[in-house]
Length: 181
Image (cartoon, rainbow, N blue to C red; front, top):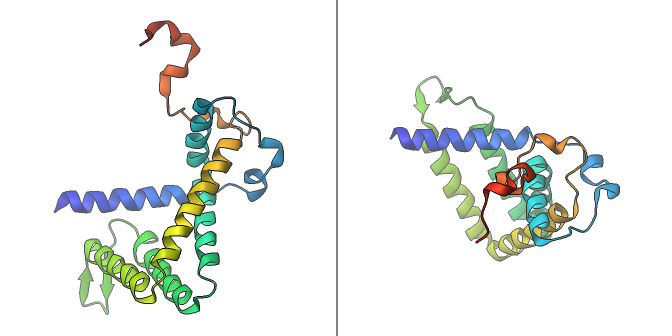
């Protein structure tokens, strides 16, 4: 039981960290920061670093593309907005040690809230029949995010504090300690 509570707490902390990665849209969309990567390795490094740096912006783009795909399904938009509001207010904005209390009578555990929200979200997608729209939107958003992440340079804007996903393998000082395969 404690592992479930711990994983819910980790999920909540990860989501709050997404909210902390908000950067100005002018920085995110700066055309002067775009250039072609010189190799596939550099492209994947850029994607990893930019995903870390602009996670909130990329999440917003995903939700915006999802909204555009559902423009002809207003009931789906309304129900999905209710689901997102439920996730936001019932799970993400509450403190980890704070349980939800109904009418000062019943205290509801985080696991019950998560299960209810997952079931509601899945029912909304299934009942409204927009599951294909959702899948296509997520694929399109993933392509847009990877394209922007690969094209945006990472050497400007104070990105020195972000660790490369390849770690010490790209560090020139330790290049001699690795033997070629």
